Image (cartoon, rainbow, N blue to C red; front, side, top):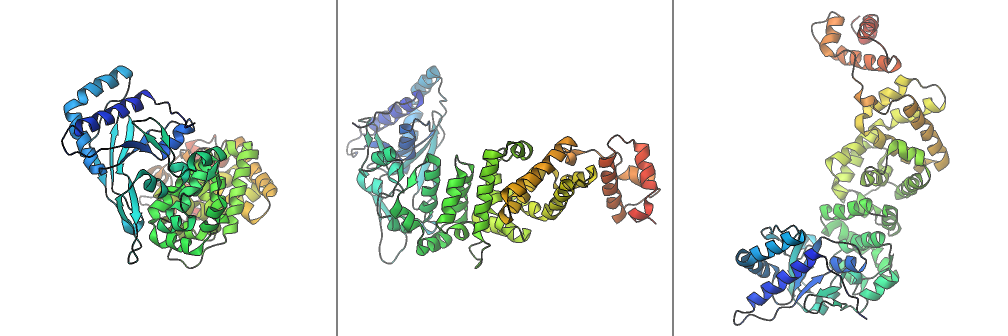
Length: 489
């Protein structure tokens, strides 16, 4: 038997509004019959009992723009009734204007989509469509199609299910979607190679859905994902912003390890993470070691997790693991993270500084492990890293794991983190100096600043870490006695 879906109050109201709008439109002579369906991810998630606030509305005989404009006009005349109903049901009743997002075939974005928001639901209106190719163009022409044709052109059978608003039935035109959900399989409706050739981004989308849903990618699709011509098409044809969106969703999802290992297993690491213009990429095996190391830390090393908080920004932690192979050059890492996946400025800044700070972090870890570290030795390193010190230390740990032994590396860094906690250095970067610039100049009888002033500030900070209860007078005395070291002779 076909599954029955239970709609939320907002979804019921939205469904009724769509059907009423269609009825109003079709009272006009000559208006073609119109079948309304909800499609794709909403249907899949509803079958999994996962609430979704995004609905794609598929239209059998109208474009999204035509129906969106008709819906907007209908709501201007009749919207008050639905708004009152929404208020009574406790539903967000605001209805936004429609917005058009243009297609970009050169970047494999073949559809113009019409978006709005109704009753707390983000809505896209699109017509049922098929893709028609000719021999002179690599980009398809989008034409009206049947529901069957629309289903077959989608990325995965589990994303090709429909909910018919008239019959309120789930429709599975690929004849495989419901069974694949039962068997937890990710499969392309058509031959995988052609599916990926048409839109190479589907490779990453299928990886994302597999690790999000805990499904297995079907064997033929896995084989096609390893094809070098598909990799080349993904490298050159798809915008890096779209690649980055998929990668970040994997990193922020429920199972980043599986998704990122798929990327390595299918030899996609350089295609995804490197600058497309580069001919060389660092050793992807180091990324794999970093991934495994990070997952083991999350699973087994609660004390390290408590100290470094890698779950606090999960996507950033996995991003740092992905760029462990670039640890030899912060400039190249910074560039690869931008040109490869268009990582945010803040993420790239953390990565670059983590690489730059790594030698000092390693030295501080060695001192702690050898029992030779002072409070200042560690405090100055954390001060240099400011509020990103946890991410910087995590990156250094993952680099050590990728280059050596997991147990040895985690034991060493655990000792370091314990020292940080026992010496109350977690907030070292916020330590207020006993003396600031003008006070330091006055204390040393100088009217102007210069390179010496930074040396004095750093010397004061270092001394203050080792003398946490010192007074301003003692700080002045210390600086006065070390003028030569500061550079004042």
